[in-house]
Image 1 (cartoon, rainbow, N blue to C red):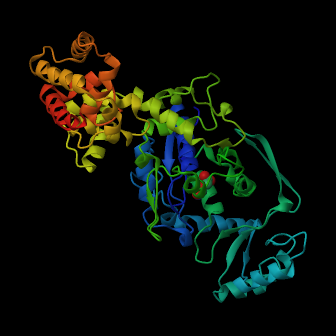
Image 2: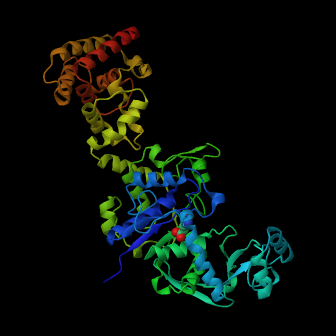
Length: 511
Ligand code: GLU
């Protein structure tokens, strides 16, 4: 029997979820679904100094909005609960103790000022920020430099300590990354990371290995920024005797700034005017609201589709994929090694395509609240018709407000400059005649109305082009909107006449 695929998204609740984070979720999710596996959400909150109130719930809400819901997690439980590392605190110490007993880790009693002094003392031009590593560990206060008796004494006295991994001197740690292939690290260059803190809380390095083991994780996908930590994790898997159960690693390429090198940051979004968070994120300290894709007017389908394509393609030119299609087509061997530059214009293109593709009926529920916020009450059937007419013109869901407001409200201002210069008695008379005709014209439908309107214009010696624009302005106030007579049909006979009469009253002053 083959092992069931189990993957995890393991965020630290330190703030909003940005693009890169959601893409990590997505690749995990696709892989899990594709292999009939489990997708686990685990909250890595062992660093309490970085804990941010509300961040966990925000992450859960984002996953829900994207439609990437986990099978196990702190909010739903599961066989391997608890799923918050702070609630698992008591599970980690035994492994740290085991590592000390085996000689792979040691107690370190150094005070913050000792560490400060070490950094000063060993600073050289070649090594401006020395680390706690094999070069300095025997000069520090730890169970390797002290005698067994001294160490026992300090422990017996309750002296605070941390447990550090003892990095081997001269080894190469190698593993096979599913995206990068074989990667290797020289242990001599890596510091002795803290595994267990003085308060008994594990650090990320110990907790991630213990939990991936206890939760039977088979594949670990995470951002490339974690690649430098991977040799520490690989060694821990080995030292704890779990090497055979080690997950397969995949380090995902970074999402890069649109206009330069380096990882995309919140600042780039502020600077260039696009969101980097999935949903609005209000920083509880500053109260500053960082805009999210959701509130900017993205459809989750478009957001997910766009993220899938940031670092992957299926080998063809196809760009529009539903989540189900992604599940069947996604493959890690087509994930690029190189980082992908974020392109907001492309993101907009995805959203526009998805708005066009989405059923008007389905959009009603998303657009109605946006209109209501603007004080426009809507009837769902009528709104559906309107959406059908204008969706081609909307890049963001929020565009529906401007694109459809005039269906619900009689214009209160007109683009006079477009009408006045060419307005004359013939036009006034023509439109007055049209109002009379429209009062009884049957059927009150776009094609028939348009044909009648154009015929009458020709009869009166007017070019249809010259009267279409004023007709549009009478109906919507400006030179925008879908087909003029589609608008007339949609708002209906009574409202069309009200609008024409109102405008004609005003245009009469131009004569
Ligand atoms: N807690 C880490 C983070 O915040 C998880 C890294 C990993 O997946 O191993 O991204």
